[in-house]
Image (cartoon, rainbow, N blue to C red; front, side):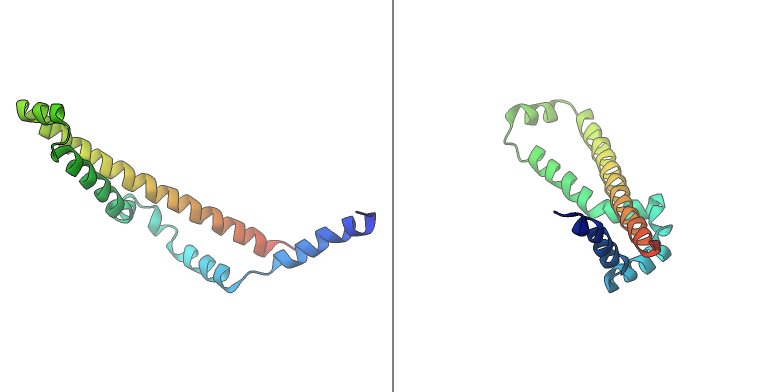
Length: 122
């Protein structure tokens, strides 16, 4: 590549990168109004609840299906094991719900900051 193209290519990319698409503008407007609402713990629990509940239900179906005979015998011999399973299920639901919601919030916040930087670029 000769020197002329090296000097003009950054200008072409900067010029093309300044404009925001309509979707990006709508996302910026949406995220400005909802970013603080999505940061609250109860909202995060509500957002991630369906996925985490599905994981816990699958674990319980697997556990109570009886395919592993030793686990079935251990469950029948100790009644406190049910309490441990319920506590573990609640902890799994809370962890997966909060983690997935925080991760989604971080992804949206990163996109928001990138779009703002793109918009403010001279």
